Amino acid sequence: MKQVREKIEEFSKIGMDEEGAVSRIFGSKFMKEGQAEIMEYFHKCGLKTWMDSVGNIHGSLECGKENAGEILIGSHLDTVKQGGIFDGLLGIVAGAEAIKLLKEEEFHLTKDIHIIATNGEEGNELGGTFGSRAMMGLLPCGSDEYLEKAAAYGYSKEDLLHAQMDTSHAKCYLELHIEQGPTLYNHGEKIGIVTGIVGLRRYRVTVYGIGNHAGTTMMEDREDALVAASRIILMGDELARRTGHNFVETVGVLSVFPGSAPVIPSRVEMILEIRNEDEKLMDDFMEEYQKQARMMAKIKIEPVVQKSPVKCSEKLIDITEKLCRQKQISYRKMPSGATHDGNAMALKMPVGMIFVPSKKGISHSKEEWTDWDDIDCGMEILIEVIKFLESREE
Ligand SMILES: [Zn+2]
Image (tube, rainbow, N blue to C red; front, side, top):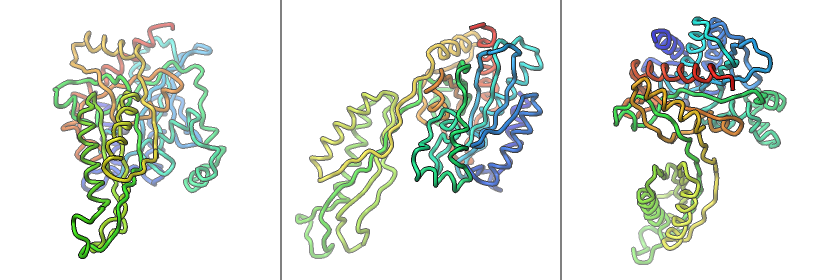
């Protein structure tokens, strides 16, 4: 659809640098500019438009029935620092254009359609999926520390609480998003039907050794924390590969103490991150990891982040699959390795997510790309899913 391309090209200019990278970061002036533009856009699409108390932009098209159900569609307006043009923005534009089309076609609606451009989905000081967690009433409003941080962004406790939505009429939440991984691209498939969003856990792993003089302590007399940590990292990598089932494990942070060239490291702190759709697999992995790591060094493992996996709606998966078959569009059922607003939404309603291919699997980069033909395919399926849901009275 021409309009989707035009709008993505137009809105992605907000916060774009000369190199073509987009930084529409949570709380930035570009994000504020984006919010204003999206409000105007929703308004022009003929939607009842408003911004809630935490900066999510809403647009709704009412079906005219009293106490009608509501289909939510959304994605995030913020980006990472120097991200690409599609991440988040695609789902907003696709949703708005889909609603506009239904309106133009005078499609008989049985439910209201409500689109949301969320705020602060990407990692930020108030936590990723900030806007959607606020809407679902999941923010830690009892924490003074959190409230202080929120105040620095201009949000009072009332703002955080007030953003909570009434979800009693919500039938589902739909999101069209780029895959941000290489699976569809490598297999030449057009659509990813997301079965669930993987759970994520982070642990602080501290490895202890004995700090000593790097010149006078012979190799056989050392307890080098960094050497032990390195062996543990390799062990974890190996264990994750053996676990299979899309299990991923990463050590992305490593701090060496005292961090001085002539001193044998006495302590290493690292952040171990694991992600998978299956909590049991994560439990099993950690049990084995601890067992093996304990044999290799004196260690301490503390949980830092724990996000449970989310299951997408079986019903929405089935509907999407049938529509792909009908339209003869190639597809794959797959988990999402990245967190999305759907994580929060899924606690209150069925969630359906559709992926389109990311060229070479690249995202969160100015190199992020999805062919416009693939965007059209995703758009077509999104519209068909909405039409299917709107054509049922349930
Ligand atoms: Zn995203």
